[in-house]
Image 1: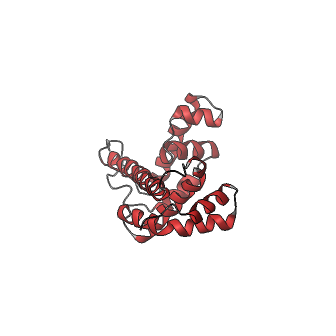
Image 2: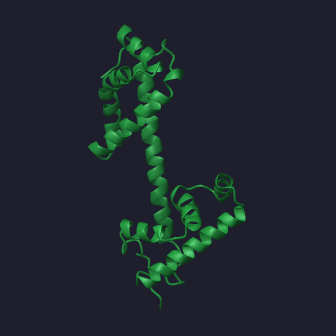
Length: 187
């Protein structure tokens, strides 16, 4: 479906720029079919496509002030949806790469190659939640959110060395907890 630059559409966009909630709902409805068609091509299932549409529409609203009314609005929305899907899959790829890196890691210090297969995400989350707050925050920012130690130091107002130290201590505590849970091979 194409989204023609009609007078109605331009009026809805103008109202959206004034933060009119009904106009925002109308713009979402007008853009939904186009957005869903684009996102379904990139998503593995309908739920993921809906998530991508929602994320993309948030970007549409956040950047609506940059839209040039002389250009095709449908093309502008399509580009945002494609970029949203690409960004989503870059995140997934980075996440999957992290686990591939674990598969190639040196397990001579007692790690089982299938350690992540032997623990559920919820069990791992519980272990992370048991870390002291300073360790938990640094661990989450570094290992999950992929911040650098320099970025973490700036965000938390600590030194880069403290960030590295807290991360190392968090990993050690998690390893100890995993060993205690008999998830790691301690032989």
